[in-house]
Image 1: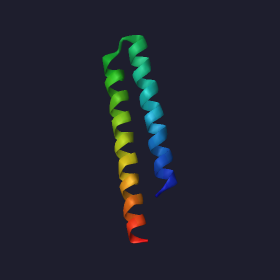
Image 2: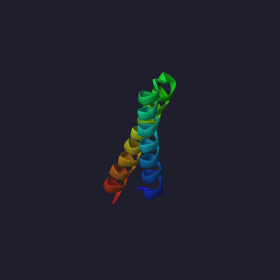
Image 3: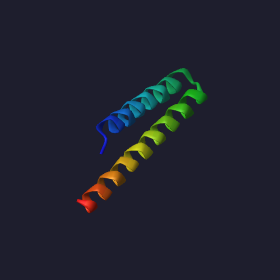
Length: 60
């Protein structure tokens, strides 16, 4: 598990949520979609880190 990767994913998720909210407030569909895409990418990063953790535990 890389704590830096998890932090990066969390930051990306927060950025995405903020961007999506701004898109909602301003009525900008591009910002909403980009925000959602960032959140999906962050979820994927977290999933990858979880798989790495599972593999490491299985090896240890």
